Image 1: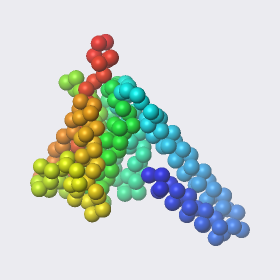
Image 2 (image 1 turned 90 degrees about the vertical axis):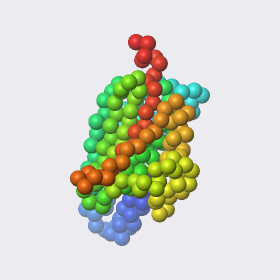
Image 3 (image 1 turned 60 degrees about the vertical axis):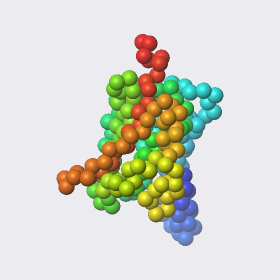
Image 4 (image 1 turned 180 degrees about the vertical axis):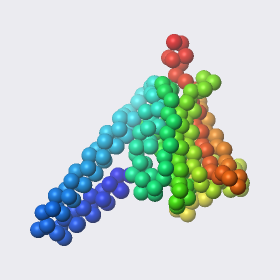
Length: 211
């Protein structure tokens, strides 16, 4: 994510150096650079707030974590022209290590962006509370997952990505289980609908249950 912003800033510096006497171009490049730096700062501050050292799990709003994960990858979603749908119903508080859960949701969003078609891509992010648990689901309208992967999907070093190492879902599953939660998936391969939905389910905070 940070690399994308830095590449954009490097390109702007290069363009400015090529046209140092074009005042209008220089001002426009600086305006864009300022916008990029502001955006990068916003994402960095949000992300670091979840990664502060935690000696133990703490109550966090899962809606805020889901929105932050989406913000991190919003630039990529726009560049791919992916239509993003959000349905985030709060409050949805769970006792978690926030940085780890942000990593899980972020990984699911990356997988969805990898899976959507080149044109007409759709990503849906949902959060809701049901049955004493908080459910965060990430859906795509890709071609679905091959049945040969169904039994090994959450094992280490299993991937269908050309440059993948197959640790994302394995790590996500371990993080979910550490939080006494689960990750499940559902695949659609119908003539009128294709895609995959991954769902992270976590227990509602005990603090809220007592209210």
